[in-house]
Image 1 (cartoon, rainbow, N blue to C red):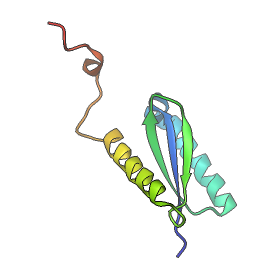
Image 2 (tube, helix red, strand yellow; image 1 turned 90 degrees about the vertical axis):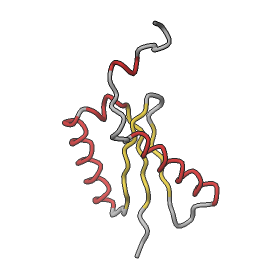
Image 3 (spheres, helix red, strand yellow; image 1 turned 135 degrees about the vertical axis):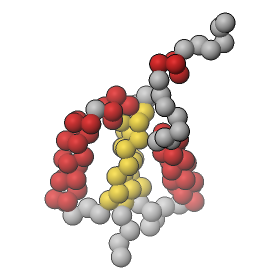
Image 4 (cartoon, rainbow, N blue to C red; image 1 turned 180 degrees about the vertical axis):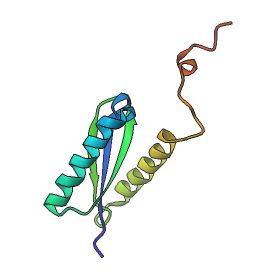
Length: 97
């Protein structure tokens, strides 16, 4: 069986939180991949820096790329950690009394 490409899409956190926009983006991406016959797994990762897409082919990945894949997985686990609720309190400086 063919191994799927891994598409890691770093998107602005605010865009990812807009469920309507994400539904449209996801549907369009799925349609485009299917039209091209691409076997891919897509992961959306929130970012507050530059938006980008990384494509990883696990079949030909080097040891360095495998390390990067493992880091991406760790980043995704942190980004989607359901135990951490981002609130306005997170933005406040807690060092002041």
